[in-house]
Length: 158
Length: 158
DNA sequence: ATCGATGCAAAGGTTTTGCACTGAC
DNA sequence: GTCAGTGCAAAACCTTTGCATCGAT
Image (cartoon, rainbow over all chains, first blue to last red):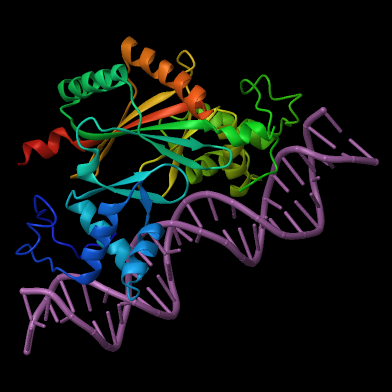
């Protein structure tokens, strides 16, 4: 792990980052912009490629280090779904009950990121949030439902 | 990816595995035994080490391949918690729904793995399974509910 | 002028693959 | 006897680290 970043997390990003010892640099702004425009959860490589288009001098290392920094400051969350690489998303986006569902095919390892919950489902998740707070003292800020199974295409091939 | 394993999943393991083209071998029995006796979620290396004690001829490759096979057949689930290696656990069959809840603290990055669902929650997840099958042609074998937020300890410290 | 941030190259650790051999059926 | 399963070594893969340089403050 990288221990170079400070511990006192600013309450938001951007905004509180100056004066925390953090510097505003081009790569950081680019990466944040890419994350802000993402239509789905991006892997580090995807973030790198999109950043590269905007700023070809950027390096993959910087992407990883910036993501680390953003995670430590609660700006983004890291999602591991078993596909061998992590994905990242702005934390604010999944705030509240805006819950993503990931369909992960254990056969072809493809990954579908959907966002479609019924009223019933939202209600139950809200209740779950309250229950987790009471029982475990855990305040839920966002959630992701990961489903593992077999996708359409893999069934056809059998 | 490993394409060597057959596609027709047996309905359970052990039991239905013969006659599906799968062979009952010593390494497979050992690995299954280790998983059955596990008191926690084990990493591939831990599974290898425990299997090694029972059967020193075993190789790490076989562990990975067997785990892959078991995942594809819904016998175990793979859990990634952000520590850089995956962990594996027997999929408990609670009315056809293998569902874990992970509470992930975005502040201290600690991780709580609970397994406690109410009747309501189980019912809704069942419905969700059916809906995902109809709408996306995706057959759910197991699921993990990932909650991101702040844990008890971190709240105290503020 | 500092010292945090960067990019490259190299290393690290986990997981996968190629291949010849073994053993379950 | 077949061919799925195995183990070893090597490769592939994602991620982190060392280090000299750059640049925000």
